[in-house]
Length: 473
Ligand SMILES: Nc1nc2c(ncn2[C@@H]2O[C@H](COP(=O)(O)OP(=O)(O)OP(=O)(O)O)[C@@H](O)[C@H]2O)c(=O)[nH]1
Ligand SMILES: [Mg+2]
Image (cartoon, rainbow, N blue to C red; front, top):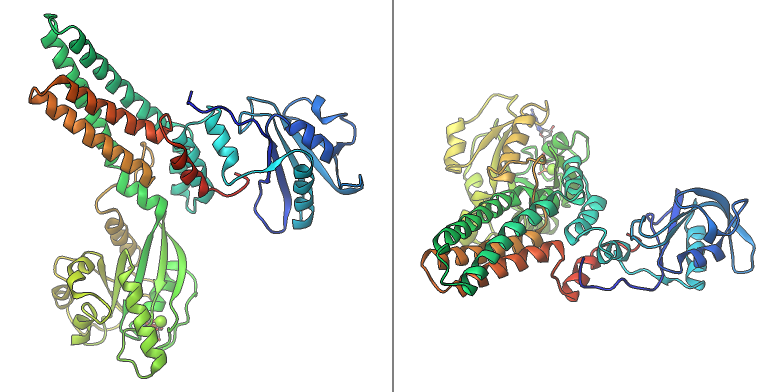
């Protein structure tokens, strides 16, 4: 249970996406939801809504303020605590036109409900103790999941896998805490030595589990947040062709005229489950006019903001000094070039044509970085490129959605703080510092774990978390 009281008013919102669709759902939740919905929806043969059996869909009509039928609809009652919010809830399923769904919502608002805040249904599920905060956040991840891997990670968190792991860590820490307290209260006991060893063991165990979970964070956060991948290079080297090859569709215009791409083009791209913003830029040429100058400047802007920069070289044309200059071009802070290098992957395109330079020549340009050969035209080497990209994105971390994974930056921060507090506790214990320092460290670590599950979190932090939800969720 958490320290919050269940809110007592009744809220309503449109639960489905805006725009026209087959069906739209207005959801009402709270103590008066049956009364409110009963004034909006009239069942054909099921009698008064307040007396319906739970979880059974009934056919009927939505009426306007004058009692005139505006739509045929279905409605279902879910009774507390067996609903999403754990409160009495009614869903009215109307036709999916913006006008009818809006009118249905307005009728609910005119009959005792208040418009829900963003994420308020999920917040109530949390406040009413049906799910913890990590699970509530997983709902948001679920709604915004763009790839199957994201979906699986969200579902795992929603089903409580992360919460269970945190709960297990908490138990170990609480046992250690109790051990320390006992030692503080009965300092003369001869079982002291054994007790200290046990506490030390428990702290070590918790530390290892936290470290293991933090080890999944890089892959997890990337999976949730995605990466920005920018394709750049000289004009005509095949940047747009490469974008099309990766997307498996002719998205960007490709011609043999240098300077074809001018406006930055962005597409969503699924890199073996990792959501990617794929960006095609204008060739980094010496600008011939104002338009090209602006285009080149934008290209450099994109490169600066990229997580990964794909530098495309034309394998069939001699290497020029421009390739070198490209990596240190205007708009890029020279001080950041080593950072740029670590974000860079060189692609040698047009490998279907006779090569004009060796692989070693290209590698010399970017010491220590991967160089991949492809033919965007013949879609050759694309899978190898994807594998190299994925390795870069994950920096050696595995994308293992079978185990529990940290995907949320807030959780990563809290868990890192827990790890830090725990390290100080262990250090205090190992150096025989006062036992209060050990117990203080454990307490902080526990409170950081509790911030993730919401057992211990303030109102502002909650507001911040739920503000990123949509209304109706
Ligand atoms: N043979 C061969 N030709 C290619 C390959 N990739 C691209 N091309 C050709 O190279 C020309 C330029 O391709 P684009 O994809 O437009 O090149 P770009 O780098 O986007 O060019 P700009 O937008 O002008 O900077 C086109 O004629 C493509 O068909 C390839 O792998 N092999
Ligand atoms: Mg182009």
